[in-house]
Image (cartoon, rainbow, N blue to C red):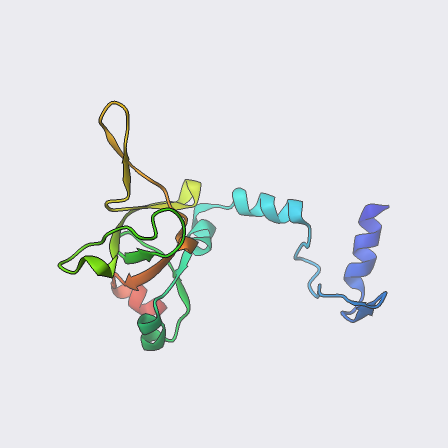
Length: 150
């Protein structure tokens, strides 16, 4: 049956299988697309925090020697992908494009960023959610926990 085949291939040491390299080395980790998607979308909040990591800018990457960090509320970010990647930013120089994160919405895997809003028909402004992978962190909000993380 299907289950026994996966168990047999899982117990086998990684190597060549039918001319192709067998990539799976841990039996406890699934290769199934369906199971990975289910694990992603039903993940609890403390795991979603890690999933919602954003890459650091080049200068922060060299300073802290870390490629990405979980995003938090008062970080300043630059949108690098999507419809809002040329959005004008905070500060005196408008070409810097650095915007502050106003909310991290773990339930929807999205972040809300200042001045990235839409006007509704009734005149109310609502924030537009953006995925953290589409931004680059340009300034970190450092507290004692975050300093310990770095």
